[in-house]
Picture 1 (spheres, rainbow, N blue to C red):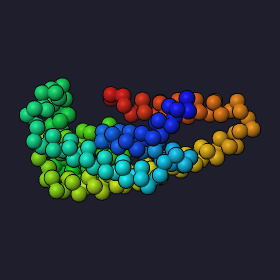
Picture 2: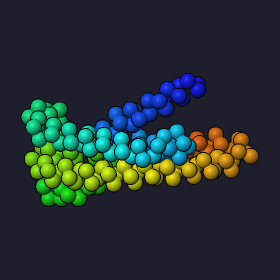
Picture 3: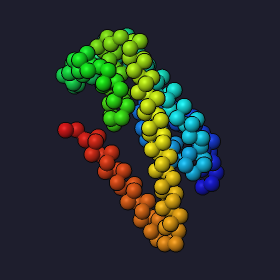
Picture 4: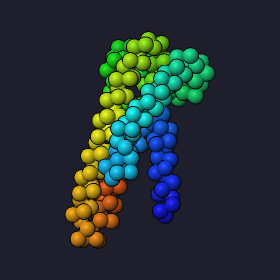
Amino acid sequence: MQEMSDTLLNWGYIILFLYSLGGGMVGILAAGLLSASGHFSLSLCILIAFFANVLGSTLLFLCGKYGKKELLPYFKKHRRKIALAQLKIKKHGVSLILIQKFIYGLKTFIPLAAGFAKYDFLKFFILNLIASLVWAIVLGYLGFAFGASISYMLDSFSQYSYAVPIFLLLLILLLYFYLAKFSKKR
């Protein structure tokens, strides 16, 4: 078990980079949590997640901008949503690009829709840089603070060894139901 844990920690920065190319929300939170326990460097995790997130969103934008004809057949069932997203990007592009990092499920869709809508690349790139930096810092520190508070609570619970598994199970269930609620179709 210890070997698997060590291997995961040795590959942790690479895993964070790869995970942050796509969504990365859970990855940067987990990295912040592990940073609180001293396994990772928080500043390095933030830097890696920021760089990977910018790269991933930029690639999605470019795919949408230059590969629209090739990609649209994969979205046949979602034509109306794509058309609406293109209209929203043209009308509210700045605010959508800035907040999309924090809304679960939109991180991959908004850059594609911006590319489909032929949004200005330089404007998208600058907004994406700002949004990714704020995203990585906020979620990295939230994960760190959460990890520090959990560490404190686990130390407090150490007198009551039966309470730790119950607490962790409740925490996992809470996270599961929270993510399940936001990923359901409406």
